[in-house]
Length: 221
Image (cartoon, rainbow, N blue to C red; front, side):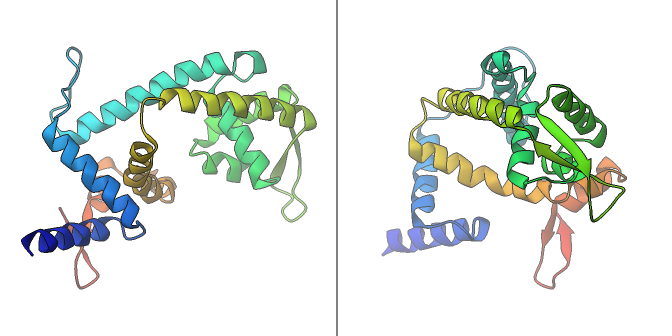
């Protein structure tokens, strides 16, 4: 009976954190945590090592992103795309179906100046066309050209192979668990990061670390 109560409590705690998750997600989560307790991962030696779990997690994610960026340049070399960011922006425009320039840039989480520079380069390569928005003459819309569609098809195949290569040693369950745990972080910040441009870091920190309480207000952790 005690084991049953313990399992119910574990499920309740998991469900509070991840209300959209299912039983299979809970099982992966629980098994991974038990495995981590039994075999603690040693931190790499040398260089700067943060002193908190949050810092070490961001360091790990940042290094994986950097490695992915380096290999992306190799994978995309023959396509004339200079970076994974250019591929991502072209991919966004294709799937948004003729979006406004600002819509494409902000969907990709780019600053306006950076996104504009990439769009100009993609247009020079002949991968994009730009035309006036019929609903708003002040805005421009973007469309991927046939040449752009061709390079997008080639690039996507290589980028998918790169993703497979990067996570080749992880099981499918481990990959699904990583996705389950991290997707809420992306969702939390992706929809709000533009509203933080005019705020100080301390104000942003207080806002994003505030914990909801019963009366609807928030308290800072």
